[in-house]
Image (spheres, rainbow, N blue to C red):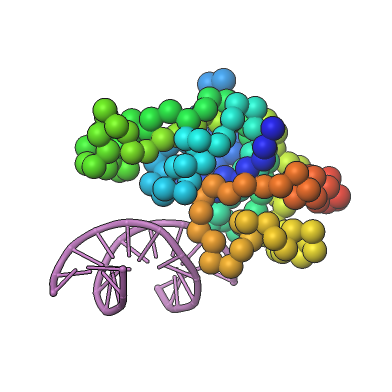
Length: 156
DNA sequence: GCCAACGTTGGC
DNA sequence: GCCAACGTTGGC
């Protein structure tokens, strides 16, 4: 099993939105970046765990855990001209964009903030913390995963 | 609202 | 294939 981190703006889609969905499942669509597409299409497997990260939030940070519920399949929002993520170059016969479905697992008592992550020596190499990183999906190592879980627990 | 970082686009 | 222009991301 692998670990991931997925970013979302909570005013667009938050962990509470996910928890309130029927079956607590939601398709992660609208991603229009090839690196993120490749991870969803090729690498993310059912049962993989996901840190749910709120960006453009005060403060930004990890708010809980989700899991991959359905593995990569075509993102049909790319075919819909009415959709804000419409891409005329995505052909239904050869889809350009993919999504996974994610399922809610748990919400932290307290957000593990970006500042807390940056203060951890064990997390200096964490992909999401790399300077200038804008990828909305990044891999997380097992070591990083348990370090963040510890931070979530330690918080009073 | 600002702006640094970075991906994408398109002219050449 | 280069690179300037442009758009987006996301912290601050």
